[in-house]
Length: 222
Image (tube, rainbow, N blue to C red; front, top):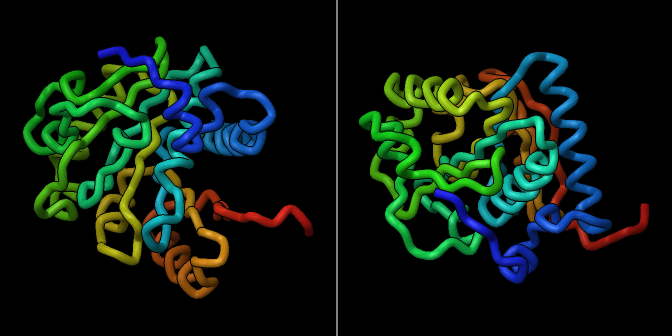
């Protein structure tokens, strides 16, 4: 189903790319770098995770999504994969609904029943409530088959997965082989270098680490 985001909600959620302009420039630069690297290697699936919670990974996902949406020749989907603490629908300011994308991964429920569309080239797969045993679901054959079918049916150029924090569960590692690359989001003054090193090492054993993003940095000097 189509939806039109509220400008006020987008601003309060720090989704700067919805309106574009100067404040969106850092995310647009990230979008272009990510897009160029992925295209050069024919990669289509990007996971976004963090060492711990509250690093801003969902905000990064949403900003990348709306930035990519301004590339009208690209078709992008963002899928909520943080099944322990889903927050994407809230960040987008969507009213209460019954979308539960985990149902698509579990039993081949039609994906369209659990997605909303913005414009003609951006879709969000949402989950409204936590799921039991998410790690087992994320590494199941049914989940892999459902995602392949979604990619084909929607003719997607890129799929972004909003993943759970790495050090809170094994969900990200359980899903890692289903993606081409990962962005690791670190929070300034909160995430430690040791945490980043642990996550990078574990991810590199399963997939490709595209880079580390330093978020929540309040200092503009060198």
